[in-house]
View (cartoon, rainbow, N blue to C red):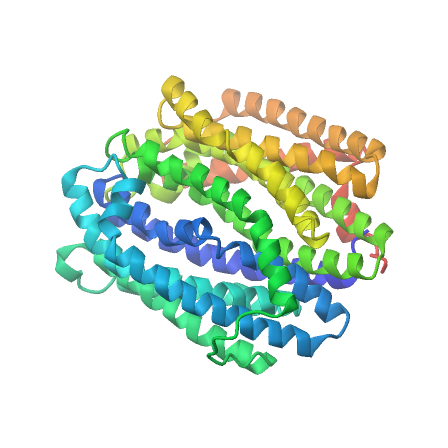
Length: 513
């Protein structure tokens, strides 16, 4: 089983993230009520995601996973002097390179918008150009805070990087109640996003300085350690570039499907992304750090136990969540979005990708946990080859499925690509852990439990419940009752099939390694 210390990190981060995600949901609901499924929503959601995409495309984002893995090994071996010297050199390298890239992207912002959002009308592009002046400086800010947070995670200071990310959300919420700049709410949202990230930058710098990483400007970028880290980043940069091209192609393709396509995709992803964020924030960094520590001191049996039990535990708890989201999708979207400028027509449009995005929560688990293993093992080149070969077919898959299904073919494509990626990573992980004979049987029983619960719950829903879009009380009542039914059916089926991870993780006494 998973050790008590790791369970403590997982559970504490999960509780913290639940609170933060509730705040984030409030923010999303307020934005949805102000913008609805509209051109303004398309512009803000299209432009605000660009800095993150550019950070990946130029290779800076690749450093976070490698830094976490390498610094965790230094920390496990008590090589703190080497750790902070390497940190300072890497921070300087990112500092100066990100400044240069930020100026380039701002100067050529019209070209960037034209390339990444080509389907926008001239009116939408004109406003996007103006908004990009506010949003593009995030490239510099997020590049620096990325290495700060990766270093904190390596030192097992997991809570600060998670909690600090609430600042942009709080600032954005406050901005919605202020007078609109230039009579456009998206200006308020853009300035608030920038201010919130500046606050993250300042507090992260103070925190890393407190931990011992006194960042000093220098043109000395390389030693043996930084060269190895940069080489590791180079090994996975192709993977991240292809992944980001796949992600960017979604907005590029959706921009040709008329007003509301991009925003409806983003609204559809909001709830699944919330659960993915919970999993990533509560599990990934903790898992990567502890796997790196175990592998560094050559404890293979414990690392396999941690890896396998993390996957099964996540699947056990997420399967009923996905079933609840699928069965009660109309009630959930109505409760979240049906107010202000968001109409029933907007709900119906959002439902198309929403059902497919729900399944992506499961495929996210399937690939993100093995990714942590490959990073911990320092097998950057193998991860790059596997991921690149999968994501390179992502763009044509988006195009083909959108041609047959419409804009929500993007969500179907995402499900296929991430699921395929996860399965291949698991197959290759056998070379380290051996065959998964027992584990495959457990996984099949979990899937059977989920399918039985889904089918039985669907029949109950069709026979005894109906959707009342504008009736708040009925929607809440039906959602609550169906959730209880689904949980009970699922728990009973997993108990019968002897895959009751709730009992294993919560009710039984956990043993240390």
